[in-house]
Amino acid sequence: MVEILQRKGTKVAAGVRDLAKGEETLGRPSGKLSFLEVDVVADSPASLIEKVAGYSAVICATGYSPSGPIDILGPYKVDNKGTIKLAEALVAAGVPKMVLVSSLLTNGWEAGQGLNKNFIILNLFGGVLAAKNNAERKIMKSTLDYTIVRPGGLKEAAPEGQIRYGKADTIFGGSISRYSVAEVCVAALTSKSASNKVVEIVAEPDATKLSIEQGFASV
Image (cartoon, helix red, strand yellow):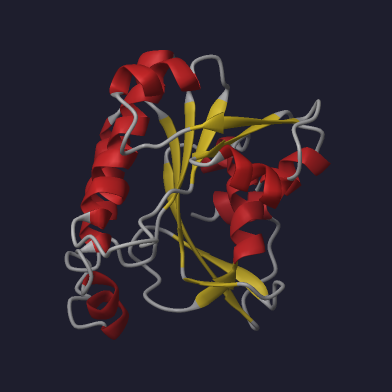
């Protein structure tokens, strides 16, 4: 996402928990790139409000990933409470737009997918889909202009096939390149067709070829 925004000539602040790792991954700060030390779990609400103030939009791509001792409550802390805290900070700071990277099947139980193997496997550890679903619901009830992007399984490989776009709770399996997800999220920042929508995306070889804007409009 940061690379795509920079190529577009957009000034971007990359929110990272570790500034040194951020620079190692994305390069040193420049006229178009700065870094913001952010931890949606550890930061207080007041601190988050101060950090996000003045930005025109935020893409939230946080998610629990064990880097030390496994914490069964990790998804609850990060994907639920942390995401909600960030959304509330955006509202308080007057940041109008939030793009959230979520996941397919977050609402799987209500969508009749309780026996879907992907739903079961993903929820085995800490109920991560339930955590994401609760955060999604809070964001949808807020005053934010939101776009919730629910990708399928994330692949490191280059994009293949075409992106299939679906409304909430209409796609229940599949995968997609991380790069494609990034392109969709960046486009959602400025697309009126993406406003206040949940957009599900996977890559399929025989999907109808659409521009991202057409994809948003189809949902």
